[in-house]
Image 1 (cartoon, rainbow, N blue to C red):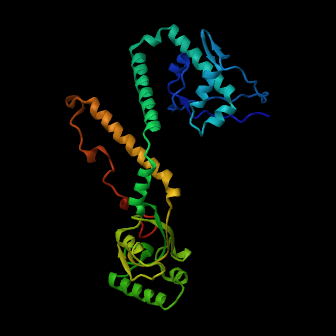
Image 2 (cartoon, rainbow, N blue to C red; image 1 turned 90 degrees about the vertical axis):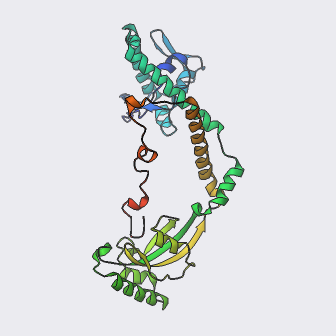
Image 3 (cartoon, one colour; image 1 turned 30 degrees about the horizontal axis):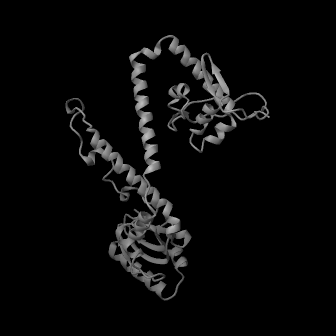
Length: 330
């Protein structure tokens, strides 16, 4: 059976250093292609002692242990593919080593350009090692996770919502109704629903929200601040199953019904919270490190430092600027 042609999606950026040091490669990788073997699959290779030389190129040797360290350094999602085709990876690696040896023979490793690149690569690898170390050491406690959960319940709440939109002129569905006309129609819809007419049937008949009307006005599960403010306020203040009075938004008037609310338990939310708190701890530590390092950029060469707002393009934008998936969504 001929193995499928594949491409290594990543190649360790610290390869040139790891070949000589035998240390585990950095998980930071750059795109690099590799050709698959064009012959029938060979029998499974036998295991060998860790110190056995498995690749030799000139005077440079790589042991089984060192080679396995390189494989282990690939991102988890890539590792099975590389493990399944490790001979192809080894051949690609050997080819790289041969080219590197020739480059050294031609003293290309002594050029200013190479030395600068080598220095930057070392700095990058050290920085990545620090980040990995911080991720291992900076972790929130169970008490911190629980306290965050208790203090931010709204982050873990969802509401199952449906609505009927009576749009005003310029809104969805090509409506030509004035605000007063739209409000009058919405009041009539509210009255019909409170007399017992089926919500989904009425929504399919009169709603101007083309995205939800075919589903009986169903918007699915929504979270806090997912909708425009007035709609959001109604969602989180209405009693469950009660029909709202018309709620005005820039799209028109909405009749809203909250069918259910639920809060994710701590057992479901704790991993997400722990990751968020850990990222905050790491960012705080990085800010401390940068402040202690005394970073200075020459303003004559680089220009004046931008303001915080200008330094983060789009930071002032909100989700309200995005095209809504349906009327009432930000």
